Amino acid sequence: MHMTWERIRPITDRLHHEPANTLIVSHGGTSSLLLSQLIRGEIETARAFRFHNCAVTELHRRPDGTFQLIRFNDTSHLTAAEPIRNAAIR
Image (cartoon, rainbow, N blue to C red; front, side, top):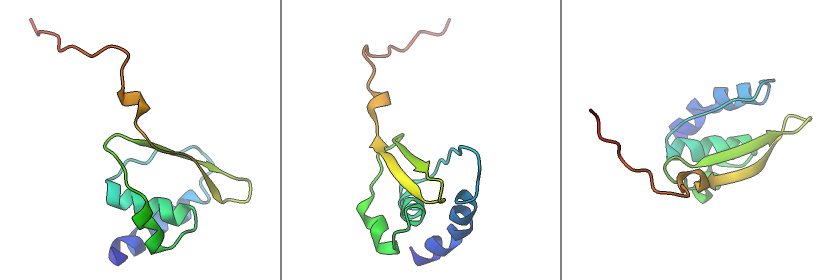
């Protein structure tokens, strides 16, 4: 975990200065470390974050460059009003 924490540091450093909205797709363990760094937590903070598959987490960059957690581990987009049916291929 400590090695990954250090390996993603350049990514979080870049994100703190990135002017555009950015989409990041990653595995859950790496995502928890990344989120912890972005909110200026410690490596132990990452243990509090668990991600479901295809979950959306949204952060807002404040004018001072810090991040605010807006939405965490949201899977509501996976619940369709009607079940999706497999279409037969002809």
